Amino acid sequence: MKYDPEKHHRRSIRLKEHDYSRCGAYFVTLCTQERLCLFGDVVDNEMVWSDAGVTVERRWAELPEKYIGIQIDSFIVMPNHIHGIVFIDVKSSVGAAPRGRPVSRPNEIEIRSEKESGLRDEGQPQGVAPTDDRRISLSDVVHRFKSFTTNRYSKGVRELGWFSFPGRLWQRNYYEHIIR
Figure (tube, one colour):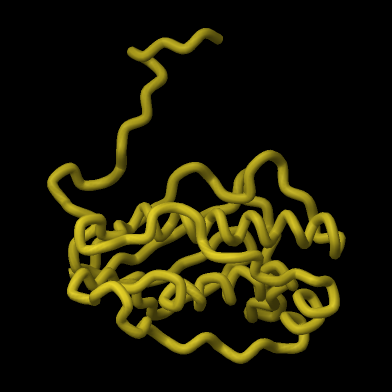
């Protein structure tokens, strides 16, 4: 089918009048492509993370370390999606110590899947670092999180035999709710 701009246009689900780079708290939900259960299973009403689920949780916990002005709060990994709360604090200055909840201690799965397999961070995050002139927005945070986790998951597929995903790890968009 040929592209027809009258039929095939995506409408933004974001509030038109809201600046997503200003101070605020946001509840975010990201889903895997095709809703594949890649991050674990629910067993006896408890979420049991796979190695990939542990890795996704760790990448989320590292966001405040990588981006000044970003804080995180509650977060949960489900078999095919995640939920998390992100705080954007534009009062934070460049070069200030990052804030947010501390990164949790790695468990045995994390140690085995990252140390023994060589899955380690490879350099600094790409893209323009936010400054006073260019603040980081919620979409920047989500985009970078998706990039980090996709790269790490792809490495897990190649080196650890994790279940492969078709095309993309994450769905194109994400759901957010402004917390007032």
